[in-house]
Length: 156
Image 1 (cartoon, rainbow, N blue to C red):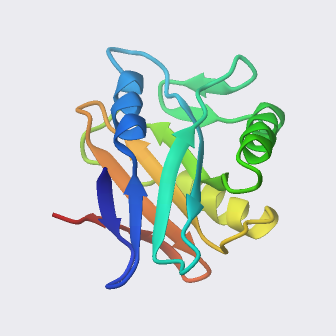
Image 2 (image 1 turned 30 degrees about the vertical axis):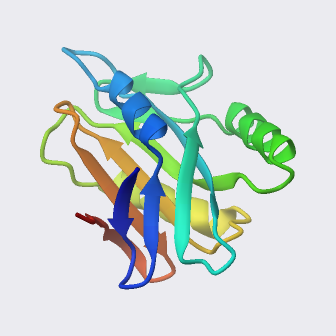
């Protein structure tokens, strides 16, 4: 498992299988950006947030070398499916996509998208996460709350 520090007492954990599977989406050559949604759960004491799954790009999504636009309906069907199968334990936690870069920084569009997702969606935890995957396999992991988007540091 890969752990990121949300605060001194809270952590985001990306399970190893998800982390490894993300790497199969690294942009190579002149390929288009790809992305999807993050799904997972939070412990009852809110101390740990687990990313346990993610959606893959669908044919309904739009993408180019420097953009990815996820369509809502296929994503919502996937959220509903995992929520039902987990008896309400697994829920929407945020968004992920690739960037054709190594120095990963969310674009203004990325910040606006995750902020709008938090504002418009019925987010059960009042926070969302943004994962960006670089061409070298590096990750940007951000935490969006009412206070804005903050980059999370990986715990050793």
